[in-house]
Length: 261
Image (cartoon, rainbow, N blue to C red; front, side, top):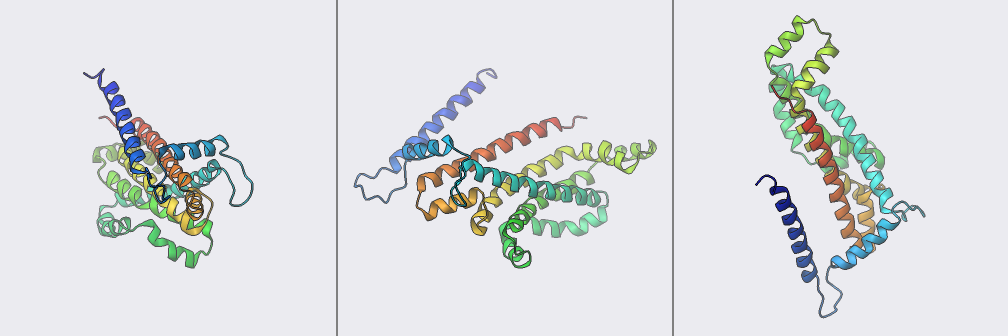
């Protein structure tokens, strides 16, 4: 049964994909040729192939390949995510080691975690007044709270025996951090990182569209303004595929950091 399950999953994956394409095709048929239907899978695939044949061309400010827009978005997410992760893990360790402070601040963390990163954008625009930095700050806010909450929770639940052994061995603070605290709380931290990266990737697209900064969100907005719906739909698929690749990467990281007693 276990040997057959991967094949069964693959077959179901293909079947569901074919059903989706068939439903999409018939739902977008325009028998009366009024021109007000969404494009179907065939014209979308044709336009997508045209975009992929030359993904990195650059002919001016608004005429670039989709690969360039994707690189801008990925780079923006990486920078904001890494900055947010560094702050979140540092603060999370401090809070996790102090139960009183953690319990006092945890309600505020939960409130701020529930706020959409896009909601901060008007304040950032008013104070920073630079669209590139505003987009990075939106990604930073999306990355901060899930990792902060998970890190504080994971550190606060480390077995006291581990910390006692570190004191007996007279480990320095950096040694204690990297050899005891972070490994013990690693799986919980990685779970927070996965949530943070997903939130960052979701937040960056509307931020780029609203701010007019180069990226996939900007590309989608330009295609909408030009009513190039096939390119717009294909860009949505590109965003989803990049998200899947990132998810696979974090799954691999989570497996490597799995802690077994």
